[in-house]
Length: 139
Image 1: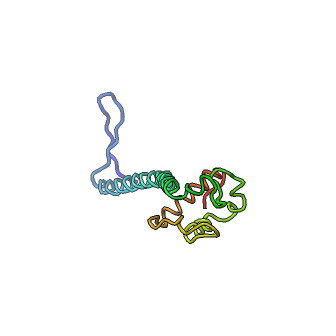
Image 2 (image 1 turned 30 degrees about the vertical axis):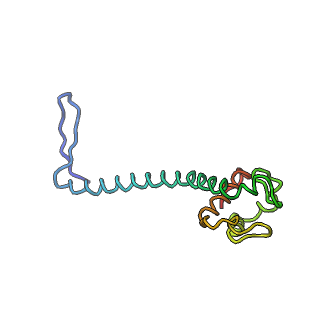
Image 3 (image 1 turned 45 degrees about the vertical axis):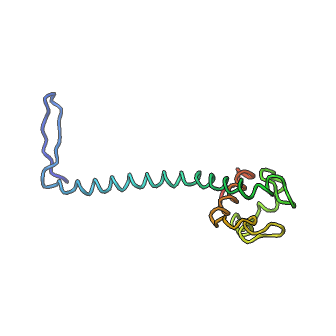
C-alpha cells in the first residue's frame, strides 16, 4: 500500500497525492507506459508491412511475372483464374515460391530476371495467390 496524502481543493473535491517516499515508482510507470506505446507502434508498423509487401509483390508481378501470368503464355496459370491454379494452389505457398525462385516445368527461375531478389519473388507469388484465392489464409 502506497502512503498518500489526502487534501481537498477549493470545490471540496478530495485529491490524493503520492507521498514523496513513493515517487521512485514513477520512473518504472513511465518505462512501462513507454514500452506499451512502443509495442503498439511496432504492431501498427507490422500491420502496415503486410500491405507494403503486397505493393512490392504487385510491382514485381507487373515488371516480370505479368508477361506470362496475365495471358497464360506457355500454359502459365493466369492470375485471377481459379481453375488455372486449381492443382497448384493446393501446394503450400512455400513450394510455389521455391518453384518461382528455381524454375519449374516451363517457368524459368525468377521469370528470367536477374534483378529480382528472393523477397521480390516471394512477394510476387503471395500477391498472385492473394488475387486468385483471396479466401485462403496465407502461410
